[in-house]
Image (cartoon, rainbow, N blue to C red; front, side, top):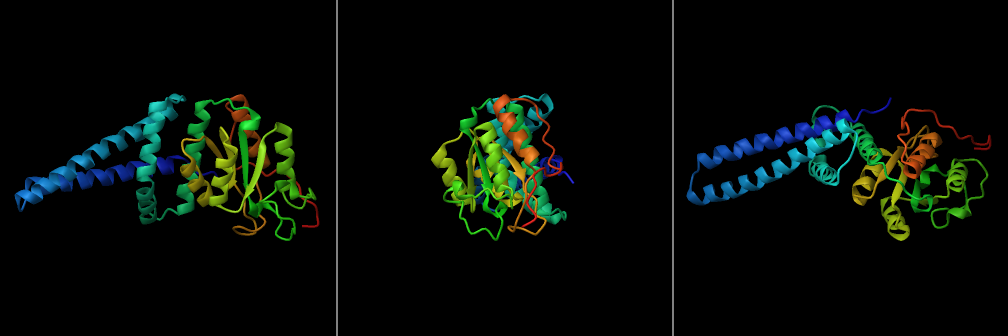
Length: 268
């Protein structure tokens, strides 16, 4: 099922409520001090928390306005990203308390990120788009290492790496395969793209999106019929639509739940 971005937004709001409670507790301690020194420390801490609360509140409001208005402004976007980065750890903890799985929260975050990126309406040249894929998409029995050189792929069709080559060639984008977040960041640093279409699991996509901000990243969740990190698959239709969005700035539908469209040979 498609994960709703409202889950993550709701957890952000709940995190903000948590900060409000902390502020109220701090205020209570300030007006009921045990000593002048403690009062000064609490007062300074309360001012800091109040300023942080104001920034976060403006950030959440900015996110909501971006979504409702369907357009992005740099100030709103920066405030929204700041609020997300500050509240993200709190949202994970609160989500766990309410029985929401981490992957569900992270998938909701990815949906929210994708919508914010799409609303920006960026137009990017295909050669400035990096198609970044995880190595777990490669057939586990393949002897050819493609993380160093993607062109070591023999295009046998046993996995979707062949299809990703075809997509990259079709649109003229750069394709890279990474073994993890560290190598993925190195590819971003090396190629200096203006936009990224990233394929990964919830954990890697979330960390990658946050690590590369404010670089626009459209995330496509991989599919794991054999479990995590083993012969995973990807919805090529969504990969193409993400590339098309960056190239043409069109409001292309980006439903993560559509069926995977590549085919593999019977030798897999």
